[in-house]
Length: 429
Image (tube, rainbow, N blue to C red):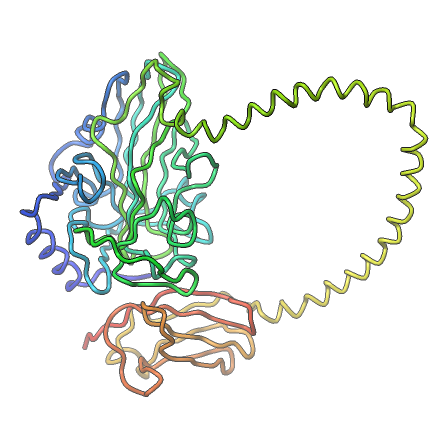
């Protein structure tokens, strides 16, 4: 949807080279082999083979000097944009780079609400572990924070033998922009956005002031996954943009942290297993199983259960639930769904070049409304549907041309949100 501008590339390059001397340094993959990335991760108890890579020579690399920013000193970085652009400080509109690489089908299964992925960077390899688990440390960071929390969700995953293990500790929830932020699981989140906020999740904490261009990142997280010892296993480390290629996201993995040791109990999920220690309450349920035998003594009281079955007949009074068939009156919701797919063009949008100087919102239902917001969440303009279309001429509520940059739109039909997305406004002529 969005294309990298020459200006964005220039800004990213200047930021990288001007700050490289500050200690936090990224070295792009360049002419090195993908095997060098995998080897950088290796710790005790693991032997690797069959390394494969999808991405560009600039969308991955190694880094050093990350202790006071990332939380560990060195490792590898995988990006859906330009890996070197993570070196701070951030740009006012965020860092964006479109790599032009395809997406990834496994990541699409994790990208809630997205219809496609693109700009994927994927490192895969086989490994033989010494024990029945593997662990490693990582940090996820993104310029989608905080403005697009609840809306856009660049996606990453660590697929160990096909199962994503990048999870919120003690849960089966994938780590993402929408699951780790100021409002959801905030104990795992570091805000670096300098007050940037979103409608879905207002910013309530001061910025951490970390010297990275990423506007938000997780604390150091741990993957601890079951594997098959002594035989070949497989891991896939992947990240991609969701739906568009605007605003970079990155994942950092600590050097030499990919380990498989026999001391399974001290493994990081061991630190999490205290939350699982309540599951020993399952053993009390074992003590409850004897009480199952008393329930066996209750089986003679079949008559009580028989008395319950008559209560089933009252459930037939639930036929009023047939009165729910008026859910067919939900057909009005069909009025909110256009008969064709809503689309926006041109995007990027230049008022000087676009036909009639407007960006078009096509295939809208009757009485739909399109709200245009700035990145800070301020309502910039509101346009109404007319004959299935709405147009925006790139001005704000005062009629003045808006500044170049990224804006986001929300399409509404009454209280129902039909679509949302981003528009890149340029001054191209």
